[in-house]
Amino acid sequence: MQMDLETLIKLLQNFHEELTICLENEIDGPFKTPDPILLGDFIVDAYNSYLVSAKATCDNPIVQAMPEVEKLVHVATEDDDTKRVGENPRFQKMHEVAFATKQLQTVLEGAIKAREAKSQSEIVGVMTLLENLGEQIGHTQEVIRENPQEGGQSVRHLVEEYNRYLGIVLEGTEDEVLAKMFRPLEPVVDESTSYQDKLSELRLAQSGLLSYLQKMYERSRVQQGAVREERERRREERERRREEREQRRRRKK
Image 1 (cartoon, rainbow, N blue to C red):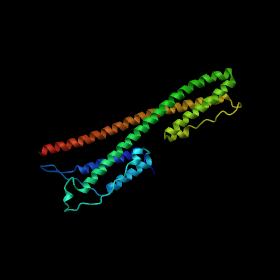
Image 2: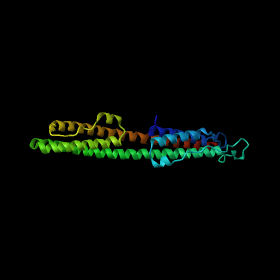
Image 3: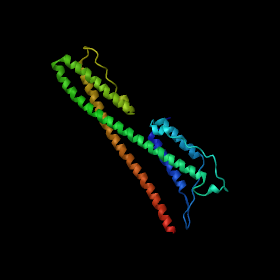
Image 4: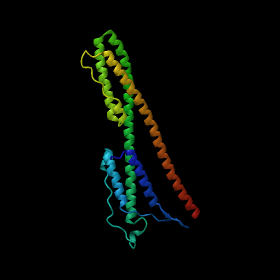
């Protein structure tokens, strides 16, 4: 089952936070001595798994070009001189994985923002077109009464326009409910069609689609606000943890 980008980003955030905690671990005492918790190759496997999921879900060229992290070739032993903090290969590999994780998370967040901006821009554009279409439908009703043949040509054109707008929305969004609720209208093919009936069908479809898009647009704005609040909460939590560590250091001195 393919993972959605929002879920993947949350997993990357949690993974990066856990790596950071291990990297910044210290020994309690009179002096705060760095004592990172060194992790094994499973963190490389975990990151590479996230990267595979990202490439399968997101066609962003930057994501597609990102390389996997390689596993350690040399592993420090207990009496290895490189066991010193900052020089241990495991410590360096953890930093590499943490950096790659943050980088992938940032790129995916950018891809979501770009996708949402494009989708919202298209939705706003189509809503404007549908509002204009509604005005044309009202005008065409008067034309049909005065000149049925000319009015019939207008109905044919308006149905084509509605189908085009619907196609833009269906192609630019992943809303399954939208795809089930709204279908292209049958085109006007001959004069046996009741233009008034077809126009009534068109007006119903136009008003329904416009109303649905307006609600979808508002939901999207609310969700974006919730996402921003969650990001801010996480940022404040990280700052709080850093401040607590600094306060503990100052009290020990």
